[in-house]
Length: 334
Image 1 (cartoon, rainbow, N blue to C red):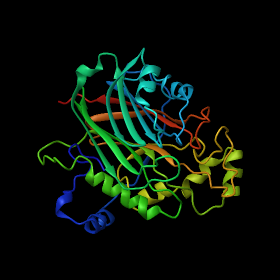
Image 2 (cartoon, helix red, strand yellow):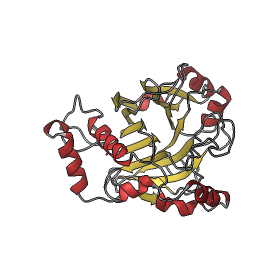
Image 3 (cartoon, one colour):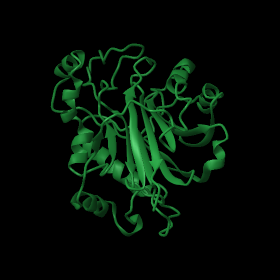
């Protein structure tokens, strides 16, 4: 999952989906590498530039003050990447632009109904952007009173000479649908930017994949999970996380990195509170909302993760937003 022209090195048109799945299953895999957070960052003092990535399932609701809380504290980031799921029908772009008016401008957006992705840059950063393209891939899914579009939207671009791809996704719900989510990840990866594939183009150097991936905590019931969270022992639950398990099996996100899951599971909350689901379903709290990144060549680009956290003060959705702050340094070539 990470290519400049598509997001995967495989040539999709030559293989059936079943064959692609088989290839992914049988190749050597690294899984997801968990990286520690270095909280000290002087915003580009020792880096070429910094990226703040944010993902949030809005649950069909919009409160302007929440958007300000979500993006307003990232004024020093060179790029701000905002991935949104279950966005209401109201146009969100002007609200985000208003919240960032003093510091950032909109560089690009990719929209597929309720699934949206925005990339903002500092004032005058447009001069560093080249070859900006957008794409989308639907995996179906719509329900309830609001659109819950499943699939992914993506933006690829060259920023200051670095080739980057940003992907915001919303995958199938429910704990039992692990294999469905795995398959969706693979087909999104193979499909994005494949229509006008140039076999001679270079792969992306940096890929950031964020969204409501919908992987759940499994193998443990909801009340023991809640007891561990209440005791601030939720780190003990990472071994039950479906995404990490599936990556370890080589099913998805081979070679990606993710910060340590030190924050509490981000789903499902009672709307308007910080209480986990009290409905009759009493869902198992889970880390459904994630931000992953992949550096194509660690010798060429050095990445440092300076935060990976949830935004617990926002209560208008049944999900808590997640933020990551990633700084990049291009190593000088001999």
